[in-house]
Image: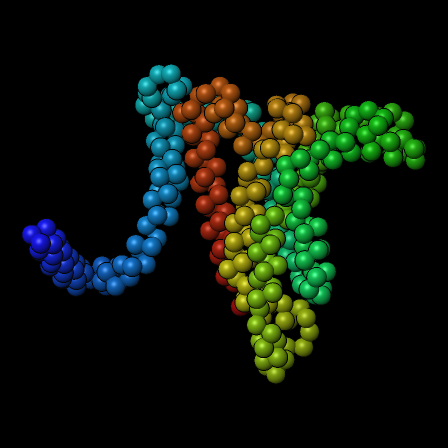
Length: 328
């Protein structure tokens, strides 16, 4: 009986404490302006977001900040970081010739595969959207499948094999276009174009699926309303109705495309080896992997990662600004 009374008193005390804390929190929110008040009113939503925020801060924000800090140091894992200021960044642009080659190759790949891959993903998604239900699913899977498996690159190593059994060499020899097998993946003339083709082939990933979903979710009644307002052809429907209705999917797909083009590295390694001949397919990610995963010069690697991160943010903002103008 005594224990029951004590538990009841403890529960009553806790409720009273909780009520007082709630009153203090509400008073605190009223004194801090609209932002603090909004946080208080949406406290349940923030509580639901807390697990994700903890994971995001722990595994994304903190590593980015640590990388930024390490980029100003000389750090080889075995010894404590030593602050050296802007030395890593100056070395990258003034003394590291391979990094300049990596920037050039990355820009070429980004400028070509980024816009072309993005437009191709939308056009293919647009055409697929016109197909009937079951056929749409099958065709979508067919285009999305290459991005699912890393082993999909094996077919390209077979196509561009340097012996007579490679499909490209066999075809060109049979039809008389060449007289001897070409060393496709060890020839500086061919490596980068091949990487571009393979990257475009594998660019229909998650961003492509988001475009398919975005096209499917466009309200059909908008097309009827547009016809009454003077829209007369499919191109006007596309510009004034379809694209503005799926801006979130367009932005998401653009972000994924930016990440894919700036993050090209695994494809070049799988096709041309590491490092590639005369660094003909060397990218910023390859350079980062070299210093971070092989040489363990983590300060220098962090400087490369920071520059790549800033470039991604800059391109992201540019793409968002361009997409906002769609339909205007």
